[in-house]
Length: 101
Image (cartoon, rainbow, N blue to C red; front, side, top):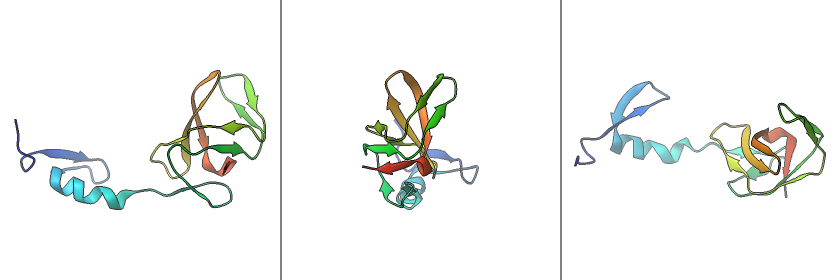
């Protein structure tokens, strides 16, 4: 088993291998703040409602304005959120089309 001092991880931002200790120190400052259409900060597990009708590509249906989406998950992108909605697998919405409930 390796010590943490000897472990290295690949940093995708810089494209270099860095020590695990350096990566751990870098992690808290890398938090991306995701905001909804009116400026509220979103977090994992929040409930959101749609602010406009959205046609879902590949699913053949339209999500109507006011639809409640429960338990969102942040993806790490500043504008994308991962959602679960019955009948649609892998639904990813842009934060600009939702409002925190």
